[in-house]
Image (cartoon, rainbow, N blue to C red; front, side):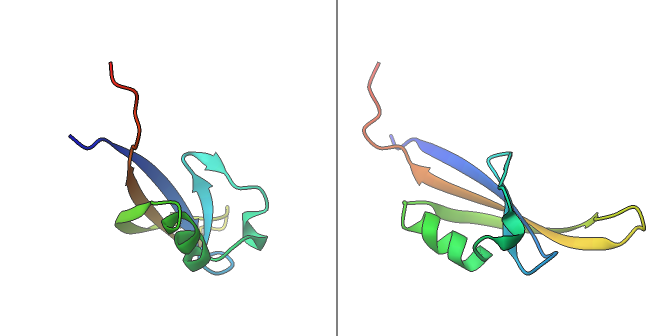
Amino acid sequence: MAKWEYLFVEANYECGWKPRLVAGESITDWQDGMSLYQFCDFIGQQGWEMLSANSTYANSDNNGNLTRELTLVFKREILNEATT
């Protein structure tokens, strides 16, 4: 039976769609990093497949300005797992 691992990615539209959090870890200088398209292409080459994308709005500052965010879920099969 296949076993899977999952990856959760949060992207922000503050300066164009860019990944901001990967597996709960902040990306350093994410505003200057790769676009969401480039990121998805990069991890797709590593075997990750997108399962879902959910769009939400969140407060981005104390003035109540809203920013759009995406939560993406990816999965890939775990290969060569040691048997117990």
